[in-house]
Amino acid sequence: MSGILSAVFNSKLDLLNQEKKGSFSETSNFLKSEKARLSFTASKKAYSDDKFINGFSHLGSIRASASSVLDFAVQKIGGGQSSGDVWHSQEKNILLIAFKGTDNATDLIADLGIMDKIRGGGSDFEEGNGKVHSGFYKTMKGMKSELDDIILKFPDAEIIVTGHSLGGAVAELYGQTLDTDNVEIISIGAPQVGDQEFKKNYSKSLSRIIHHADIITTGNFGYVHPSNKVYEVGLSSDSSFSSLKFHGLEEYEKMIHRFDDLDNQVIYRSEEHTSELQSPCNLVCRLLL
Image (cartoon, rainbow, N blue to C red; front, side, top):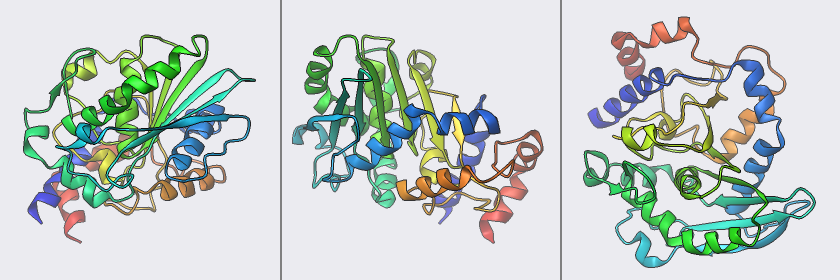
């Protein structure tokens, strides 16, 4: 129990350290954008056998080799294999890549708790600088070659890379490996992926969609998030502490849909709210309720 309390406590402190959050209007506009809508659709399709996206052709599903995830505790994703799906719109000239995540947040937390991956361990990020989570990185590497080959066939296409949960983590890593600036990465409910050196050298455009009470996105598991461009979709009425309840993609969909009908009830970590959270007593008392 103490470990869970510690993770939740640290999750709040991690959020406080983030420097840039979208205002209400910025978040609203972003969530209504074509890129955000496509990201949600593709992330949902990555979980499904139905790959149809209007206006896009499905180019195939890429599965990570079994050897790439041997030391990755989460073996239930895709029946033991992680996967990525690729679509292309000839009309829009958009290449859409979505990585499958996991709704089994308990399994994901178990992997995040492996000590050699979160306390000074991890893998060197060969395509750049810093260290990253070994499991996420090896999963990405198991699909990278095939995905790169597809991208080479569309040299002028705009690339959107996305995913929910573990899929969001893989998207953040894969997007950074691409040798182009014509890429937009949008992660949904993604956990931390790398160390401070990785964050410092992260050069791609990354937007993170989070909920303040989703322990996977806000939990301090030993790494940091590579981007401070954060779009918060939670409401003050949802919860005052982190849990697994708000992690599922269907929960994020609910929040996005209701977002359109609300005014400034959305939490953006205002100065007043930040001051309140900075009190350890407030945090611990809430956790014990």
